[in-house]
Image (cartoon, rainbow, N blue to C red; front, side, top):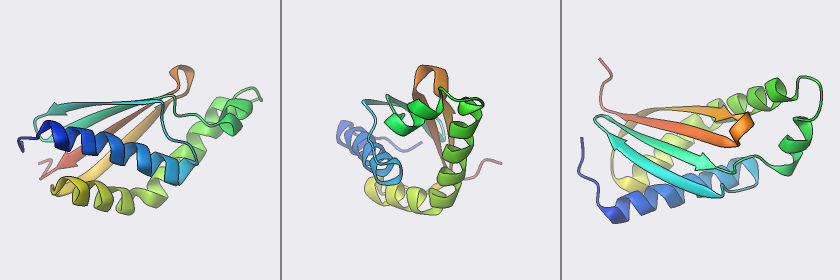
Length: 116
């Protein structure tokens, strides 16, 4: 696992917020980073847009919001990996994101190296 400096952790938090805003039109309220062997875990809070909050009040709203988010994350995945890898000077190999609608949180897991 790379040894991250506090500056790199701050850079990662800012980069996640910037990417989220670029894709969804709104940055998260807070971003927390946890480092683990071969991966970085990011918890972003307050990520839902007003449009998404309104959709949640409709029938199947949770499913609709989660599906739209998943489609957009998949579409932008290569750019997200590239931007974060460049910002930290670390070659991340993959990213996984999961939206928790009920708590308005997004968990992002960044992998580097081989998962084998």
